[in-house]
Image 1 (cartoon, rainbow, N blue to C red):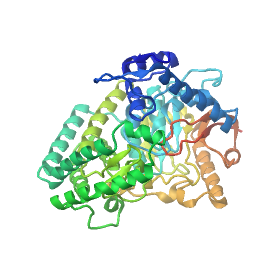
Image 2 (tube, rainbow, N blue to C red; image 1 turned 60 degrees about the horizontal axis):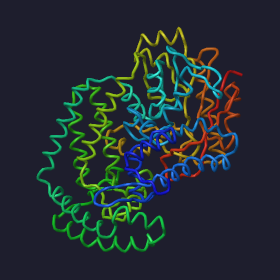
Image 3 (cartoon, one colour; image 1 turned 120 degrees about the horizontal axis):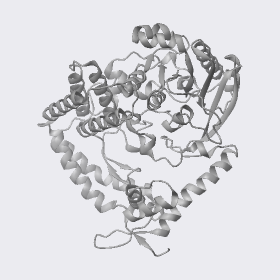
Image 4 (cartoon, one colour; image 1 turned 30 degrees about the horizontal axis):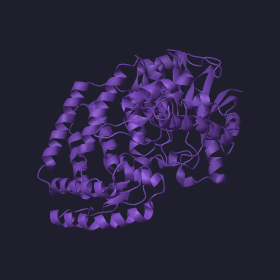
Length: 526
């Protein structure tokens, strides 16, 4: 096998059978481009080594499981790692309509909501026609998966943006009308910038970057040199970054490009270049004129997703903003000189097409069940009163059948500011912020007082929700309980933990790729 060579397509087919998991041609190309395996062949023919491919994947999957179990403990349930699922599957259809920090993957929800059992899950907790509740709805994963499984679902979130995002995912739309509105906005946006100096500037800048990067950062050769420590990345790359800077400044002067906005008061003022901000405001004005309220909500989410990708930051700092970027820079993610964005057109078009595709995919799977996320505080929300205003028929069903249980991931103590992660959307759309209602918010920290407040907050939510639950309810809460708070929470809510499932979390979006686990606590009435 050592000298046996395969084409990329042959390699993907062979290793997929060998590992019993789907490895695509794109996956093999990624390994080549990032120097994980060597490229063989010449005259335009690309081959890879069968032995190298097998060695990489066996090492990656096999060693990771052993290493993680050693670090996290033997009670880790690798069955719940969902390791075999690719990112495209864990972000399937509407689950990727908009980025969101701290969400769980749909396969985890599906595992506990569906009617299957195995050696770990000994019984069925929910059935078709039941009602499930997510009092910390976030981006709506529980609602979407409940719909797929024929289960009704209610959600609550203190963040108005989260509620909008969740409801857009489960909404029903006239996709022909949506497509028409999106095309209209795209055409008007292109007309808006057609005579802009920024268009010519960016075209020439891209040409200069292409030449420069081909000469000094050839791919994948340069990435392989970094991996093999054949180049001092920091010294070499900072030097080349400085070398390109005069070229960039000359173009800025040539086209008289304004970079910064006049004001620096809001998130939108600080984190977007001037021309990008002008385009954002132009598109938002068009969205406000859309007459169909449901279509307007979808386009709002598309614009939010677009502007998130157009913030003036480096590619590697997109999830954790450090400082605004107004110049070209060495990008450690792509191992070359990159630039900030000067227009939203490309991302707007890409996300418009992607959203239509994802909504269509979900339409083919959806069931005729009811899902809705309320904007409110789960500690005191009155579900019957809210449903009376939203859906009288379902309010009646809730009174008769009650909620079968909860599947949710409460916020972690002192880890994420759930409003600030979408600060650009709150600024642009004028949503009221409810930061003070967040449980375990980042600004409260992780001290003793914060932990006490967290325990009281989660307990209050469970006690309020209990009023609407069926007698033999099942509650599943996903949490990394390193502070051992959940046994106390269960006690304060008059509940007991009947089982703790412990799973490794393999595909985190943060930069930290260290071994990490979370628990799924199964609560029942005490």
